[in-house]
Length: 541
Image (cartoon, rainbow, N blue to C red; front, side):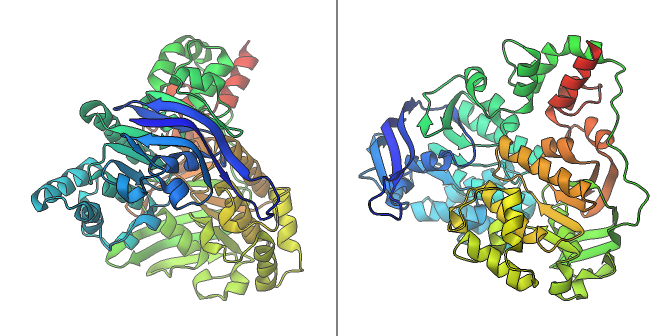
């Protein structure tokens, strides 16, 4: 169905005499029809480039040079442009907003079919099936711009799926989805593969969500692409792996379990061994004056009451994970805390100010927000220009932002354009811009979107440093593994209201939706991470 024959991709560099930059080379494999293939590799390894080879975006729109041949359903991508493959290949990009061409959910789902000339009655049926399949029926008439990031992600998947492609290619399809929505989407793809013979190729960093659905795996690393591997074989060789694999590796399990269910079977003796184990919870926050408070906060976004009656205290040294399903109000709460949205009821105080009525030059020294898409606050043509502009805007000594960036991410080329940076590099640059003004409260919206496990660990270390420096950190996240690693407290929102607020171990360990993999494997033992298990078993031995 999809054939790669000794494929490589390279791009010229600015110096005409320099050797072209090779993204990867020697990719040689055949993906059969009706299989779900997972592409695994570190951030910046070339996974997205490989996916874009399947529908001809590389090289027809990306530029560069495609070496070898890619053949899709008998069509050579060198002579067939993306429009010539549109009836066979559906492509879901990493950033859903960049693919939208209409205004509402229903219109977006129908647009691709209209372009392909699908019959009106068939179009209506497919729209209804897609709305039900992806849980979008209740937002069918909503404006796309009013949806949460996760809802937009589902619409982007649905718009491609409704067109009826035989091959579906997805780049980070669950990055903005809450755990339940992500599992629903992946389960839907799994059914389409098994029941209808759809061929799916996807790249995903949150392997804990998808590895047990995969039929085969491609590893992309250091400029090379493996052949098709069985998932367990791939996880033995991969430097990128989810907690269930990390636990199996640490404890020497063979064969490695790929799912929580298989791991629970293997962990039965371990649960007995750790029965009654008590692990010290994260230290509670000291009785100090809150950095920020919200009292009875209400926020309306159009006709939607996004927040209602929210009370929240954030104290120095805390890392608080803000969780909840897509559309629960997490991003709205962050926007209210930084003053981007005014409260229609209640009040917000950060330090001694109300950020909604205070000049931005004063606000940035109290609270800073890294948005879900860091590119939204990056405007200049180079990293150095971004740093210099932030110094000027915030009234800082020249070089301040550059020094903060060097501490967060040493060695970043100052002449690189921000759009050419990896997701992790863009996040680091945006975080440097925010931290340079030394805010007491740091807000992050889905900070691990697009990050691999190694980049996530660097972020965990940085967040711990911020807390140790006495800052309060609030991060809105669907990444339960991140919350388990770094949060001292978890606040759960539902329909704009706080439904849970407590220590991380108490909130996550018993939750069917938000429990990390280790907690699910060891329940009722209240351990959350692989490191905690290794420590506990070492202490017990």
